[in-house]
Image 1 (tube, helix red, strand yellow):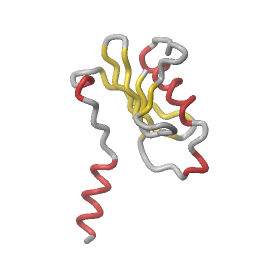
Image 2 (spheres, rainbow, N blue to C red):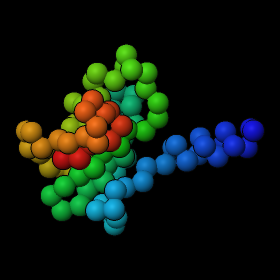
Image 3 (tube, one colour):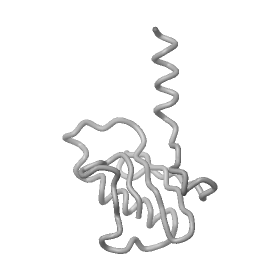
Image 4 (tube, one colour):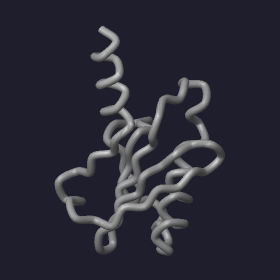
Length: 95
C-alpha cells in the first residue's frame, strides 16, 4: 500500500503536456507559493498548476496562471484567450 501511494505521489508531481505541446519549451515558476509549469510553443502556451490546493485557496490561481505565462515566455496573454479544460478549472489552462 505504501509503495502505491509513493508511486501515485510521484506521478502527481509530473506535468504532462497536451499532444499539441509535445516538444514545447518548458518553464517552471513559483508565484505566491504556487508552482506552475508553462509549456510554450509558437504563439500558444499551456500552464499547469502543480500540487494540491484546497478549494478555498484557488481564487487567485487564474490570474497567477496568466502571470506565469507572461513571466516565463516574455509574451503578453491576449484578453479573452485563456481557456481551461473545464469551467472553473485551476489545474490547467491554455492561452
